[in-house]
Length: 478
Image (cartoon, rainbow, N blue to C red; front, side, top):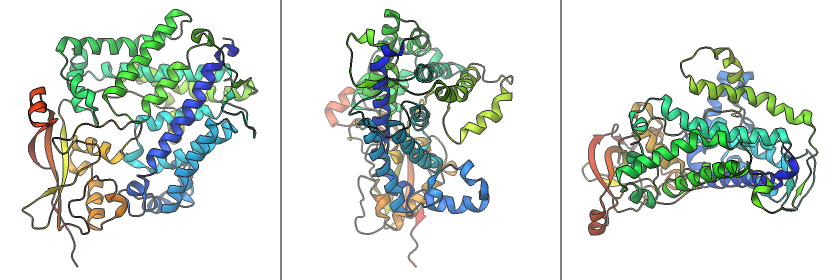
């Protein structure tokens, strides 16, 4: 591998990481106080005060976060701005590795304390990708306007390994979890309407004939399970493999809202191609001066861990790899090597939790969320790469019981308290200026309507009431 033939790849990888960091922090900024502030749903300040007494001297290892020093509302917002600034400077070519270190530390600080709201696979992928970013350029103060350094061959190989692991495991988990709908190639007949936040195009994709749904699933398995091997074969085979991987990501973007996950994946896919595949050269890349010894550090850390996840996913019940568990636990807290695979078990129904308030206990009004289904005539939104994390987590909560999601009690408490930060996470507040006397969570079964219903009534959804999701909460009037 001649690294001089991967200048375009190096530029794409570094700019993709910088842009992904910027979007992640920008997306988190308007939500951070509602989710994690002192008057938020899962206050980081409250969490760390409790853990400080339990973890004591081990707290920085188990919860690697700068919020141990300060977790005020101002600090939370400041970290978002610092991350946005550092990622912008990295994109502009200013001391890239130093800026990526700032981004990594800031985002790890959030993920370590973010609990359920920062536990998604793209959060892990950003940190794993971000760890590699620490070795993209020399550790020095410099400015290469809009440019970058060429990746060391070892680092480029690790980037390709990350893509291989991400795509291959995404296909393998669908088979190892023995979901019959994946094996019968019918999973996509459920996916478009049961996924967390479908797009408008998902509504129409759901109407495709069964044979096209099955063909789409077969093509998806081919792309996820076979193309990762073909990207390792130089020439036209590699180009075709990358094109199919990119096509899959575009289709996912068009039919689902998965935050900045697809952006990172697209950047990783394009990183495979040498300059000769593009047919042109760029002059914004300087020769890497990273010593081979430094580049070998992430390789020694990540290669064994990546092989562990690949083999563990292939042979889930095998105990032969258990000797690696202490090493994997050592890495876990820093999120620099992770397993991947969305929708291993396809959800085949769509329960939705509807938040309702009342002043008399008889007449109830719905609180509307920005993006999750509620109003039946509300068209599905196209919101990615932003991720509305409360909307997403409500989807997961609906698949479980109230006792597994006691954080919803905090949502009710903050609404009774009229927390402006939490209310800002909701699109509508039917009790503007005051809190209702009662709050409750009701469970409904949602489905897409058919095309004639959409034309005649304007309803994208139909629903059936399933009953109460949890207890009715009463506001303390003392």
